[in-house]
Image (cartoon, rainbow, N blue to C red; front, side, top):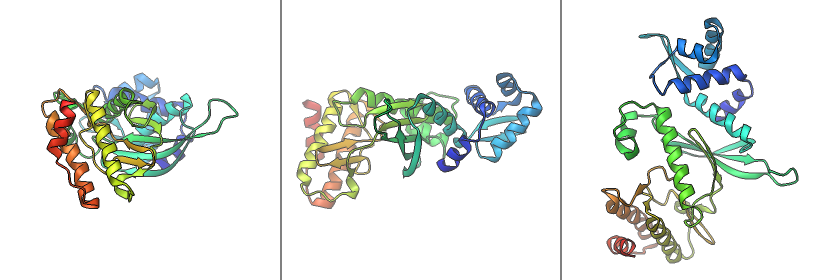
Length: 295
C-alpha cells in the first residue's frame, strides 16, 4: 500500500536507498541479485548490509532467497520508494493523496505538486505506478508486443518499459490529441495533469450523439498521427462539458502493426457497444473504421 510506502519513506536513510538502487541495477542481470554485488555497490560490510536488508524485508521492500545462493529482489514497495525519492527531489510531487484507481497493471493516486514560485498555488496532479508483471510475467510477455523476443526480463523491466512507453506516447500526442499532459516520468511512475471530467461509464450524458462524435474524432486524430490506442473503452475515456479525453496508453500500437485495422475496429466497437447499450445509438463499426483509414 502506498500509505505504508510514504510512512516508511520518511524513515529510510541514504544507505537504505542505496541498497534499493543497488538491487534495482543488479536485477538487469540477475533474477536474484547476489549479496556480494550489493556489498560492492553500497560499500557496506556484510553485517551492516544484513542488518539493513532485514529491515527492508520486514517492510516488504525487498525479498530474499538462500537458494542456490544468497540473493535479493526489490519488491514493489521498494521500487515505489525509489521513484518517489526521485520525484520528490525534482520537486514534481510534495504529497500523495487517496488512491483513485487500481487494476491488475497500475495503481493511481492523487498527488500535489508545489508551485515553482513561492506565491503560486499548489497543483493537483495524478501519480500512476505501473504494475505490469506483478501477476504473471508470461502473460505480460505474451500480450505486450514491445516485450517480444526478450528472453530475460523482470517485473521491474516490464513495469518500467510500460511507463516509458506511456510517457512517450503522451508527449507525442499532446496537445493535438486530447490526452493528459505528462509532467514527469521516473522508473515505473508517471505524473500527469488531472484528467478533465468524469469517466464515461459513470456518466449520464445529456447529448450522447455529440459525445460519440467527439470520441470518434479523437480516435481519428490518433490514427492520423500514426497510432491506435488498442485498449479503448468506456473505462478509460473521460468526458466533460468541452469534450473528451483518453487515458491509459501503454498498449498503443503504430498503424504499421500487422493487426492495426483489427485493433482499430476493436476500439471503435467497444465505444459503439457502450453507446448502443446505454443510449440505443446504433452505428456500423466497419463503416467508421473505413472512414478513419481513408481520411
